[in-house]
Image 1 (cartoon, rainbow, N blue to C red):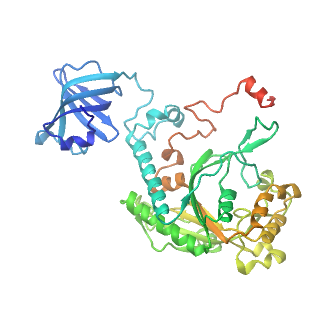
Image 2 (cartoon, rainbow, N blue to C red; image 1 turned 30 degrees about the vertical axis):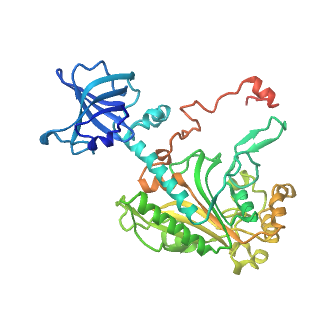
Length: 463
């Protein structure tokens, strides 16, 4: 007998079926026992007598007949509430011990270390399961939408080169080249620009990115996922319009209960945002208590540079007065190029930030495609000759004919966090790290064996 899913039971009234899943709840009334069987499609009630010993969350196989419930016993709270399974045979496939955390509520009242330690149980709760399934649908929609518009999905390397781009790198030792290290990519920034040199013109990737940054509610420690987009022969307006069309279509298809408050999305200069709202991430919802309202807004005309802070210096920015407002590959506004030599503080960058309900959910820019302007930016931000050599591969590539290009990189985790109204990024991630930088399920990071360190020519010293 083939397996029947809970959602299919409404179509099989008076038919014999086999169901497989977890015993979500058990109600023993003496002569009769009720078990709510949960599978990937939902819950269905099973009823019978003389059941074997079943503990909550055990995996069970049920054979029986689908019958309609009496009118006065219909459960309107679940999609299968009009039917139940009259059990003829029940088999316990694996027995569950008592769970260390409850999984019947939304889980937000439980201390997060416990939830993350037993994440595989935490993901059984309906809210978390729904979040990950919606994430999957959203990602698939994005892939299909972009592919239909002639974008090519290209995977870029995870083991790459450490370069001074702002955040701290995670570094990985090389066994074959002792004393040298790879870096995990903070973003595919350089690779996607090289793909434009290669002539792909329209690239995208659902990319894993790695940054050794301190965690906060809207920033995961260690790794996160972003949608990476890059296009050739486009203006900033082209990028903004395409992004707006993509996410408007996404919301309509995957999150139909959500409503985009304004279309087209407003565009506000960085200066106006700071003066009018006191920040560059304004929440423009008409009703900030409306969880289904989505207020997208573009922030543009950022200054190309900001004055260096102590934190910038710590990240290796050097001794120069200026650091990039976005990153060092952002193109200056064409009308402001002459100011690079006269007054860099007045140069506007062709940067664009996408803000949703008070959160920055994406950022991008038109890129520099003139090698001489790129060299000038390197000089203004105080790069040493050694630092410039770290980007020699980019300048060499640009000498072979590079098209004007630009793009954007919305954060998948943060976008979904805001759309779903979750309190932090970890609620839309399967196995996130803790605030302390550990992957609790796997007890990572861990101490490598001495033999591994010896093979890598690494010696660990205590402080």
